[in-house]
Length: 109
Image (cartoon, rainbow, N blue to C red; front, top):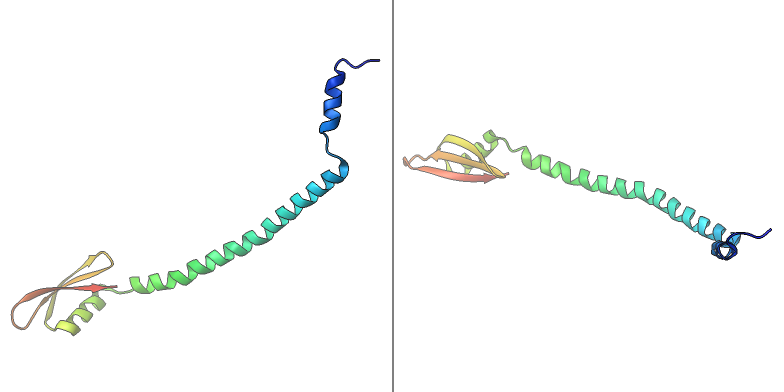
């Protein structure tokens, strides 16, 4: 019995890799997957550690309250605190000095 497409059968037979090559490719693929599976959690933990190290510094900077900013400005310039407003990464503190002048002091976080 003849096949309807004998040339196609020959092409298909040549296109298949031999079983030993398949095993090598499968083993290499499994090794790559295992390496990715092992390194991904380690990288994610390292990144998490970096974020955690940066976070306390940012929280410490944000912990400066308006009262603390007013106290810092008053300690450095003297006078009476009139107003404290948030500006960017710090505070603007308006002080009435003993001489009667009003000054604005910027206190950074």
